[in-house]
Image 1 (cartoon, rainbow, N blue to C red):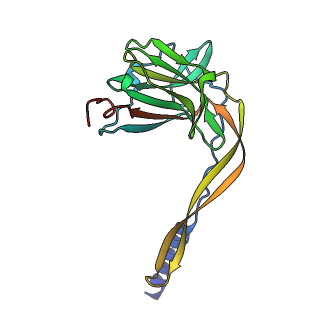
Image 2 (cartoon, one colour; image 1 turned 90 degrees about the horizontal axis):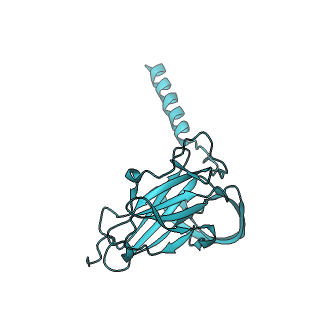
Image 3 (cartoon, helix red, strand yellow; image 1 turned 45 degrees about the vertical axis):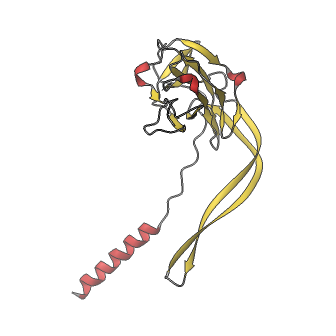
Length: 226
């Protein structure tokens, strides 16, 4: 009986040590400068568009869409280009959109943006020279016309792999824990500090498309809603 108890104690300690061990986080993803091994189409699939209208009524809404090796692609002047397609809400002109590639540690999705009509034909296109830094997004801001139905975001083969250098000021929040002798537990507290320095990122065929949509009047898709 004593031997069995000893064995159980060893197993429980072993499990505790295993549970306390930590796995280091994976390194941040690198920029993807080429698309290989994909069959691309000439037109986007309108049936796979992501709705910009939130499920609950709201005046503004944000969407983050991952673009990776499984994303669909288009033929863009003889070169492959990953893409994401979005469906605009009702009353499109009652909305302001900010859309583009989100800043990551080592990369930015290099975007091209087109506005399409109900047939999937482009009626407005934003080329690379129209993009700027908007918060944590390299994107464009605009109000679509009433005949717009979709927004197409493509990766730019011309900029993929190009370095982007910048000097940034970052505000970093860190959660810490201290022992609390009154309840024999831990108490959490947050500290903040600033950090400045030069950063180098590359435009990429993979990354995150960032979308923010805001109703000018009423709610998204509901201009008469208060």
